[in-house]
Length: 401
Image (cartoon, rainbow, N blue to C red; front, side, top):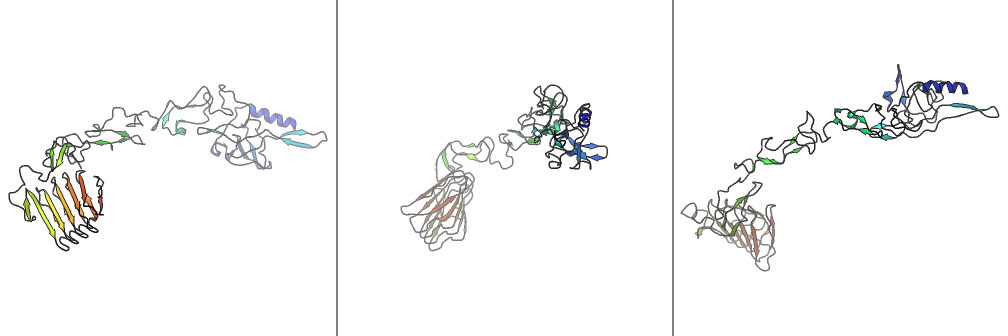
């Protein structure tokens, strides 16, 4: 039997050992095999206690040896070695085999786990090597998530993917518009925008979400202004000036204007006559008065177009649950006094104007008043003792009294 084992071993060494990575690589004629943890294929054999025998091309001394019953498995399983028979002095027979170890991986490849020590550079992929020379273990660029190219082996027997190409490698291929930070000559202008910063998606297509038409001097989309502003600071309810357009064209920037003034238009309002919504007009400012128990409550007060507006709510429950709409680009003032005055109400300032709220010291005055600021300008003042609860939208800072 010792001679038989020697002949089997010699037979296995006459051909290059085949190292497998999964069951699909183990096929001998019509027989489907299994890839054992040793990295070699085994095939069904009823004469073996385990029912499996290593193939002719198994290396490491496993060629044609039975897989031991207690370690036989499918892909990635632990295996035993070849049965090398020896006779004891008493004439009984015992078996022993090569030591096995669990399969290790490098990159996406299962390396051989048994057999002779590796010798990097001999052209044969051995224990601990990802590859060796032209022996890549069946791996390609696609094994590393890359599309095409030539996978190679480094002198230290590790994979070299530098000649592989594909989305994610940071190099623009023929079918890619970009790749990571590699944008080539791409710009927002190429994508049909005026400016901004173009980026690359995960699938190597153009991401134009950072592009904009702000700066082309034309109102596009949601832009409030673009370039030179046609309004003066006085038009916006301020002194000084001039105003400008915000860098993102989202609104007019009045930070260069002076203090707010009541009369937004130095040339006077749009009409010579005081509008019917106003009780009176004082200094070209529309005066709207709500006096007495519950006056103007549950109503909508709309300031007349082209007029700065002053709304006075004086009395218990006045202007409660009321909506106050200020006219565009004009200053708007709301004064609340009396128990519960202006409670639960909403003040909508103009897109380019400024607004102010004044709350008395009465009980529950301005409770729940919601101020929707227009040009990041909202001033709230209270008399001593007042405990209002004001809230403002995200476009401005509104300091509760």
